[in-house]
Amino acid sequence: MELKKKKIIEIWNTLENLKGSEYNRKFSYGIVRNKKILRDEIESLQEAQVPSDEYISYEKQRITLCEKYADKDENGNAIQFKKQYIFSIIQPEFKEAMEKLVQENEKVLNDFRKKEKEFEDILEEEVDLSIYQMDLDVFPEEIDPGILESLEVFIKEE
Image (cartoon, rainbow, N blue to C red):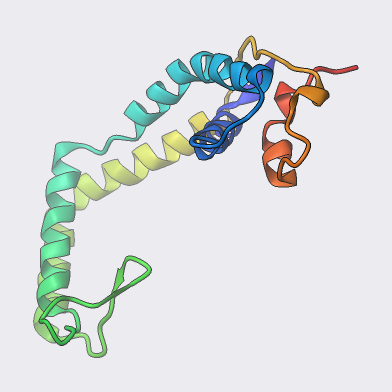
């Protein structure tokens, strides 16, 4: 079965979210078997996403600057909202330091953007996998429609 790599990630994430729940034996077997089929592709995709050491170093420096200049809570910790640092006022020192950091790491940032674009292209590629398919009646009766939609490729055509 031909699947886009981004669909493989969606399926994998759904399977990971099923952990810890109890299902009938046939459904559980199908989940385990399909995870084995998907694992190599997922591991390859995860490796392709690993940023360079230079980018990791840049990111650490950027975070250090953000934590230094961001608004602070009552304990002196930088305030974040949805993983974004909060700045009520952008201090000139922060702006200068960030501009310098970006300028010093221009090649690193360009390489990172290029790698991100390449990864987006990879996600659109199709791969042929021998998905283990099951009869619909093997799926739990009370399965969430979103889960069923994600795992639709596991359903045997009648």
